Image (tube, rainbow, N blue to C red; front, side, top):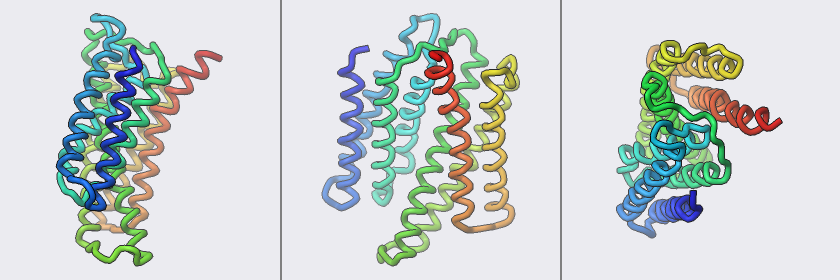
Length: 264
């Protein structure tokens, strides 16, 4: 893989983040910032075609950092649905910086494990559902972080023009995406039971247990919000905790398995 392509993608994402930050201060056109994000998505897609199919036509390379790169691309594509409001410019900054970092990591750290035969459709669907759940829950995470940021600034009286309705809107969106992501996560777990031979095998049990724990925490948050009508930053913090558990179960464990234990 030639380095110029990932470096180009990283550069466009960084430029996009700068453009969104400037548009948040009314110093740059928000429409042009969105156009830059669209360009970054197209180049990122081309990069993924090159890296994921590196193993040939019969297999696809779904090593941990390739999956992370796919997640980053999916996240940026879905962000067009909620970045259409100029008020969400800081969300565009977060998306661009996160993607630049993840593309950099995937270009820096290479792993040829695991390769997956494209004919294994059940496992492919399980992986795609897992990526989809992770992506939507990441969108919920971004809304949660923005909510906490604006809430803390409003509490310190550092924001004068922000209305409580806008803050409540961010909270609703956070829980809405959490609900969708949790539902997809449950389908991903179900597909795992159906298509993975043994979810509690030695190299999978920690992922399975941590994913189930994260799903349980998300379920409690959603039940508290929609059934009990609770409204507090505590639910947001529990959502962040659930995301951290999910991240640990998949990314951190895979990094340890592929780059520490395997080489140890």
